[in-house]
Length: 171
Length: 171
Length: 171
Image (cartoon, rainbow over all chains, first blue to last red; front, side, top):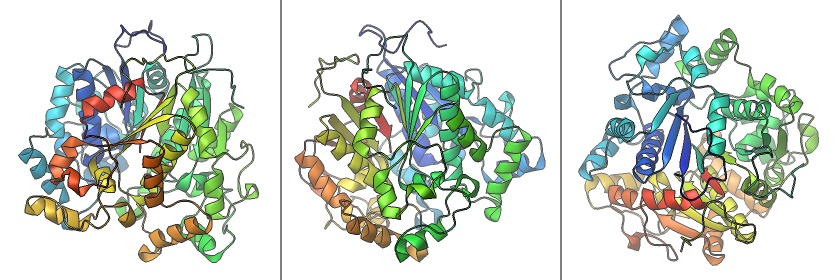
């Protein structure tokens, strides 16, 4: 969890911190989130990622098809499928072929997939926080999510974390 | 206004600061801007929000239909209607029904609307700055905007503010 | 290059620093990147911009039509043309006329174009870093890029720079 003793003017001997807001579930935005998070953690930074709005869907289990409690939430979950295996590019290229092409290129060049980076992130100690308010909106519960996450968080707690971090990014 | 005596290495007894660039007028981006701004201010942070590019439209009065001085500016104002009541999601879901569905879900879960958050922001002292350059591009004048804003600002002044802040976000 | 002696708690007499991730090649995102970078540098900040993902295309020479080594990379380069002269708005307005209209408005109001801002950036010492990983994905080499760039960079080096900066933005 967050070390509340550390202020913004932390000395050089304390680890640097990065706080990222993962707002999107577009493949081309989640990829940099996960690359920055895992690279940061591997370089010795303490990394917190707050998954909110569309980004909350990234934490969903890949085999969880329909989620939500009422019909609107269920309908939304069908058009906006969650889970790292199901993310799509924000730009539609080649009549929709763009997502699979980018994945093929990444594989050729040994760039880890978002699913692999997510596992890696948990392994190297990146703290992944689901946004409580978005969970309520989507009707999601923690059982819809992958394992290894931090407890759910509100905006105020995230701002508190971010204010102590050396790097803050909204992606 | 901004306290120019405060440096980047502000002590623990001074309030933390957050500087947000609101670049978009998509509902799903303006919402986090306003949630972060109001939550931050409620938690004791000093918050500045710089409304620029598409984001400037957020500050427009809801009942102001056509704006601008020349035909291009007037035409742009018609396709990209300003004001917090008229923002739309960046993703088109359900043949355009997404925006109203998200608003209904938010209402059910007592998440404040962007219009309500805007009023709240002004009440709790969030400083809302319109970008001068974008005003010129759009042909907007301060009479097109809601009340309670700060004087217009240029990029250099905003950068100066941001460099003194503890959190900077481009949203 | 980056001064490695400078910590996060740099004194008031050292120049402030801004680290920007230019992730997009949409005209409406690259414009603020370049305005913030040049304005920041003109105000005395040290500015680093990391061009990654779609953003890498911004650094491509305007007269370089096809790039890449295999057919996928070549096909991608055709649909997503690189170079500052060829950027397009993320929002399609007026049946595609939006990009040229915004450029006309900018010209009328003497807002520098992205191409002009890019030259200006190099002149005022903004450090422009191409992302190595994205170069590999796209099959781009430094000969595809404009002159005046910094050596290619990986995510870890950029995070290191960003952690020392006073302002970090993902745009």
